[in-house]
Each structure stands twice: as C-alpha cells, then as structure tokens.
Image (tube, rainbow, N blue to C red; front, side, top):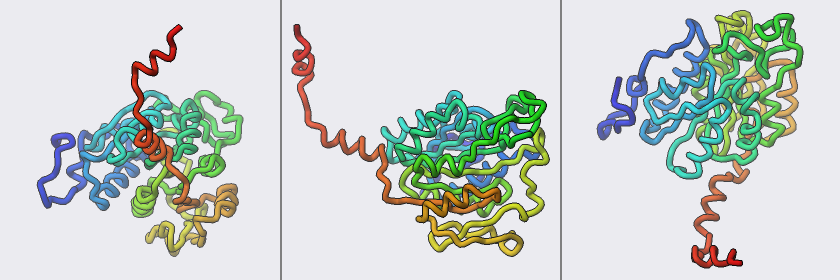
Length: 306
C-alpha cells in the first residue's frame, strides 16, 4: 500500500494508482465499485492533491469509501458524517471536502443532519449512494425503497411511497442538485467536476445497483426509462447513450422547472439546479470570528459575580 497522504514528487501528476489502497470488500457487481472508480477518476482529472483531500462517510456499504481512497478520511458513526464534515469545513477551509452517505444513512437516522447541512450550505460535495435498500444488513427497507418491494423487514412489500431525494433537496433549498448513476462513468465524472466547482453544499444523487439483494432494480441494459438534462452551463449527456435516449435542455437556474422534472415518474440525470449566490454558513462564521472584538476573560467572568 502506498504511503498515506504522501505528496507526489514535484511535477509528477496524480494517477489512479496513487489513490489505490486495499481491495474493496463489496459484493461482486456492486454499484459502489463504479462510484469509487468514478470518484478516483475525478480526483485524477482535476489533479486534487490527496494530502489536501478529506473523505467523510457514514455507515452502510458506502461507508467504507474512505478506506479505499488514499486521502485523509473519517468513517463516522451512523447518520453523522455531515456533522463531522461541517467541523472540517469550519476549521480547515483549505481542504477539499467530500461526504459519502447511503440512502439509509442520509435519509433515515441522518435525515435531520442532511436538512441542516443543505440549509447551512457549507462548502462540500455530498454524494448520496442510493441503492434503495439497506444492503449491508442484508436487505431491509430504506427511506427510498420502492413501494411494494419485498424486503426482510417487510416481506409482504414495502408499505410506504419512497422519499424522493431530488425533491427533498430542492424543497429544503439546496444551492446545487444533480443526479447521475453508477453505470454512467463519464457522466459521473463530469457531474462531480461541476459539483466540485460550485461553492456551497453540492448535492449529488447517484443511483447505485445492488445486484445481490435487488438485481431487478435499475435496468442498466436499456436507457428507455431515463433522460439526460443538458445545458451550456450544465452537464453534458453521456456520449455512449446520447443517441439512444431523450435529451432535455434544462436551465439550471430555473428552480420551478427543476421541481417539475423531479416530480416526474421518469428519471433524469444531469444538473437540476444551481444557485451560486447563496451564502455559505462556514464562510460567514469564519468572518464573524475575524470581526469579533477582543474581550478580557476576567471581565467576562467578573460580570457573574454575586
């Protein structure tokens, strides 16, 4: 294994090999392999130094991502990667911050933190790995499991309609919302590039296959069920499928239209919404610290004398 966080020799470009660590411990065919490789390709194409990069994860299959990328990383507790990541953003704004969370981690026990992370708009790229299932714990219903799908916790079929992550993020006021899939490698890399360039909480929804527990979900052999959203300021359609599916021109500044698309039964991959003018909470807090007036500690304590 390469030395962790070691700077590459001067002039030596970053390669995928530099980012490799141990072999991932996922099921054969898991969509996480595609997301991991897409993420590494993005880091290489952007030449983001590993010693300036922090990956924070929650639980579930995607929770192991920090172990598999040769950067700094934190494997947080269930539902709490956003709280730790915000601390990193406040203390070390010079670091490049990425959050990796599954649908169960982010939208169940971590849902409250996701709400406030989006609302505070602190600077990071948030990647939601959505396989619509609790897979690491052997197939339980998650907040995004489709209605009627049988699981170990609801063998007669999941009772509720699923939470729609894109609508969720748009409704809370996310400054950046995009979607891609694990079987669209080029589109995923381009999506991460656009998300990384945005200043604020970049919400990236990734549909991810789980062939072990839900092999029939997400038919990646046909593109009939999804469309690409494109725009001169957006994300280009995947070249492999550009002539095989619908391409919709969508202005990512149009919040109302983004909602309409998110409410559709059809899946869309691309940039739904971007607002570069929304203030970032971490930047505001740091500026308040800079502007704070010095005070005597003794003076503060003396004010409580009886």
